[in-house]
Length: 532
Image (cartoon, rainbow, N blue to C red; front, side, top):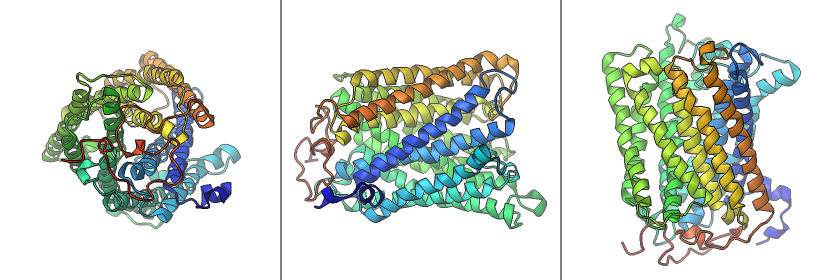
């Protein structure tokens, strides 16, 4: 191999290597995490005190909308795709992804998509041109989303590009997992992380075109005089909500299933015993994915659906709690009587289990129709989805990053700083989002720049939590950077009790691995033995 002759440019721009592309995805996600985080800081600074304080209401709405789009499509999803790119070939003994050239393309679409998304905002901020970014909420409900200026077109084309990138990434993962497993790794012997990503990839392929359709109809409504969602022309604005949430609900599971996979790899490693109920975990993941398609209208309980519809969506939503409960039960049972140690990946994984469960329970509260009439469009909803997305998805990404970082860089990270990062993040994230449950129950609406002084104290605490959590993430960047630069040399099996093929290759993982399919020995499989 003539790898050593590659220039920096050739390596990083033209790369078809799954590890390099995984790294690019992860760095991109980290950058977007901070851009989205900066927007959240604007939101929390404005809400620190009642009254209009720092920014105009229009700009505040642009911040809430763009923050969500950047965090969902720019931070959480690319981070999971980065982890998939890096780890899936290593975990199934494949030399690379099945479609390496497409892999390069699916990454390089992303920077262009986000440049498109952020252009109207930047033009307004820097040059005073145009009306700024999208401001109708990330769900882009008409008629509101159609009332902004040119940002609508930019946002929609950006979403098209992100969708194309996601679909290509998903096709690649399915092709890799189904065709490139080393001999001896049957489907039911794969790591749970690979399983969760396989199922997630099918979800992506199913729903991304639906999102593309709904936003394209928005586009033609605005620029070409169609009336899909315009009541004056015979359209229906509620139809948009149905189409959007048919994408939107599976999307939230796209953002959590890979997190389940990561946590299912980490807990057995640090509990020093096999994952309890491996097959049940696989079936539960598949059940969650199936159910995610039939619950979408629980986001719409207050739009005036018929009672039968309300009841159906209420019961269907509650059903999802069963396979999710199975997963939580299995994680807890894996811990039961284990010889547990509390390294940073494990702390984030345990934090995930506890706080994700809190988010799950507040979701069940929202699923109850009469209760939802009180909760809908308040900060209670904001608290719910941030518990599942921040302390759920992002904590799992952090856990995965610490777990595999030594494998990527070849150096151990600083464990003391890692623990500091975990505890600061946990304390501040709960100070940030827990009070929002009470704000919501008391009736504070979401997406508002100003509020009743009665909510002042809780908002102040929430904002302090927000600033603390934001600052704590700078520590993470320092930890990653110092691990790349050097530190204690990492072993091949970084964590003595870790199982799985990725721990059979040296740390740092060589540029090319498994050029000959590995021979599977006892202890190489992440779950179970080679005989069953």
